[in-house]
View 1 (spheres, rainbow, N blue to C red):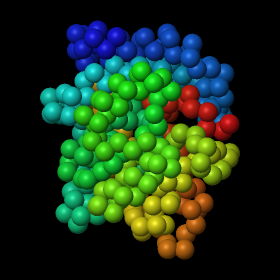
View 2 (cartoon, rainbow, N blue to C red):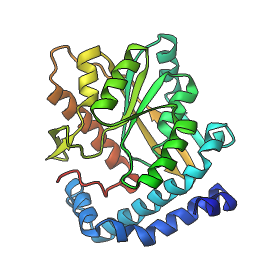
View 3 (cartoon, rainbow, N blue to C red):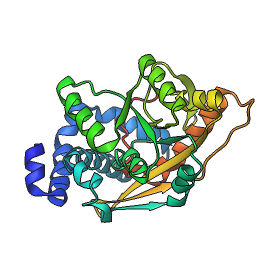
View 4 (cartoon, rainbow, N blue to C red):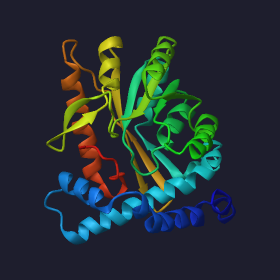
Length: 271
């Protein structure tokens, strides 16, 4: 499939990936679960809107899969015109002041572009990722991520956290998605219901006094993207890990509601 995508080029390859996942996606993920997740966040949604979000999610998922083939071109500026950055001055200030921050986002649009663009701008950053369950596919993805997306890839887990702290002491910022269910997290309110949520951002805030920089990526015109970098958020010294985590979940909720078509609803967040 990757070879076919590459031959077709990004526009047709991404389109094919989207159509393909609309067909095969439901085989691997429960339609009932996805519908339940959407209704948790949007309790008053109509049936037509529900189906529209469901189909758009699978299409975006497939486009992201196909676009891995073109990460080299995104990285080497051959597709620079496809990505615009709002808040570029915030990244520039982080570089000038040699600040260490925590970049947070969720699985929106092509989420892989976040760490890539941050690193391309000149920010020293390490990205936290969760290995795929498919070992063969994971080895391919790890190579792509380390070579073209972000050189420093940190696996989730205790070993990864130690490596992250080491890089932090060397002046590296951290980038991670905070929208996946985690076993080592805490139960935090997410769309007014408890969901296990990572505390890594809150732990880094407490340990190093770092600021949090939310980032939102939107897809438009099929293969074009807009990355919005928000102003850094600082927290009081006595703020608890629970409160910080809750506040970050509120930010994530707003991002999801801004365009629910491009968030991955298949994660079982409320299990």
